[in-house]
Image (cartoon, rainbow, N blue to C red):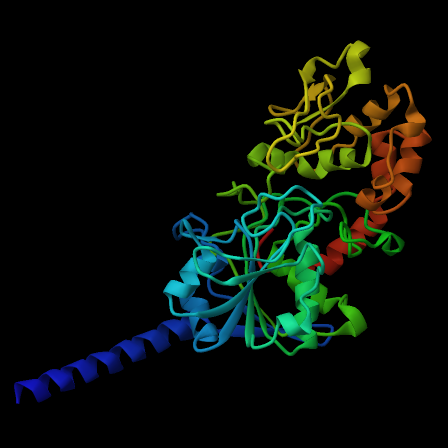
Length: 424
């Protein structure tokens, strides 16, 4: 009799737990079908920014109650790298511990652990901790192949972006969305804050200069989270043949575009801290020149320099690039470079935190003795067209150059506004 009573109590508790779970799920997983140009996307819209609640940001990955019901019993692929952190644990480990059937992991540029050099091919491998196969999307193929997707019933994308057009994680996102659309695999994006999400700036990409470091007609700084950007890719029909990916975004909580956010782990080997991430949109343009941006030092994307600036009176900082993890063959390796340290500010040049700084680039070009060899072949791809280089070579100042961006920037802002999840 006691045994039957115990069974009945256990059954009652299970029923009560199920009811509570369903009620919670109905609050957190209620989606609205937001339509953009005929596109229907499920976007979870639970109290995305209640300033009266705990002010700490909760990433999409941490909101397990919102997505576990979507993954339950499904063979799951995960696109991630070292930035896929959920409460100090890797998202792959977290999902497995929660009973999700993770079958394959896909990784972007820099690899699963984020240690590969920029642009270096990354090979497929096996994760020692889980035994899962890791397929590189920055080696032989940048887009998942149909045979690599065999058996996957749903895909999760969890990568920290930094909000710059030429940062290749959004290009990986594009190809993953396209592959999922072609193979009828739903995609869930675990959203994360954009550390440069508080402004929109720079020349909008001329699609004639489409490349893996610039796939879409957006400015250098697009001011969107990875989830918002995914919605825009779908809504603007940027996938091949205007394909539509079945997309669900798990938003962050307690985040707005004006909320400061310091990344918990470096997003790639040469963006080691908050300051490098902040400066990256402005200083990455120097990757299209013969100057060093600090690769091979401890101040990546916080310094610029070149041996020829020895006699430039303003160039007071000295450094020497040397091989190291994430930069085994740095530009100007072993050469004493004279230039500038921007780790504290962009002084001696003007600085504003809500805009790109191209005065640094203009002045560096003006003081370079061999101007014809200042820019390299990748500059136009980084800039998104020929105009910026031509304007600098014609002697235009920053204000004059910025004025030429405004028409296209205003058009982009209107497009962007359709896909925003968070307050400005």
